[in-house]
Length: 456
Image 1 (cartoon, one colour):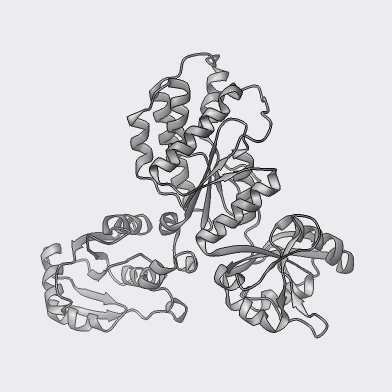
Image 2 (image 1 turned 60 degrees about the horizontal axis):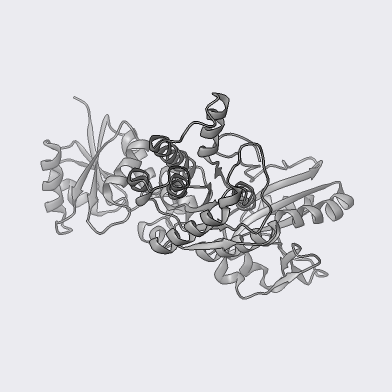
């Protein structure tokens, strides 16, 4: 007879502490059954949480149970036996309540110890700060909590340029516009002038949504989308002349933290495929009308590329409560960061009155090349997430041009700065040859590919 084990929980949401429990239980029995307790007001709902767990543990059997019972071991013992149709051989929990629960089921009990590093990974804390506790989550769960930002706009208004630039700034993935790929296929087939059909826009919206959902699992807190199914609705109007209930249904339940609408105040550039110069302003107006009608949060991006990018970053940072900051370092400072577990920057030397993290990678690269590489033959641009509630205490200083922006943190406050770093410090860029004893990519993600695999 196989040894059949059970455990129970809300998994609201699933995190590394839950994974440790499930993995340990699965290793100690032949068949593992897990009850997922469900209440109607929960977000994410229990059925979705169970689907994530099934993806992570395909051999485990997950059963969703409505949580309408008192939190008493005897009652939950009856629920477990009724749901399974048999008495299990062993019960596993990470807390001591499981001992009485197992006793009521007349089965063995085994405690699974939690690792000390998992003590911050609780459902309540994650629900309150999922981006801050990102390292507690696995990709299927991260996909749900990632802040999705869709860049939309009329033809030749810079949506792709903006999506790429934001993904590069946030060191995350971006989702290219599938509609353009679809149109390029039309051109290759000699069907560029063929009338569009609603079924094509349905296909585009479905494919765009699918690509976005796949990319969300690989995103680092923010997912950049070059258009979305909502934008496909407006494009349907542009080519068909009417709205589509089918396309609207695809867009209806999708959630975005922000839409960035690129304005028409830049010249139209003909790339051989565009034909909408004369109706750019009409499309821009339709986007504004629909965004307002639906109550979607949005920001209109106007001006040159650097101005648009700066305003977009400011709004996204405000929404997610975090900022990406960059810091050029030499080999010795990088060694000290690595020795500290990539958790903080080393204390300033006596002659260093402050710590100056910068707001964009280009400025950090310039500092690295002009100073650290010249002095030591090697420099790395490090990057980290920092909480906005800390940074809002400081002014942003312009060290030179419009994009040479930095914070000036007094040396005495560096420890507090380090305490407000979320996740690990990473290496975004490396220049020159690092002296023996370290790897320029240690702790870093490298440059991230978009969802279609192209390098940025």
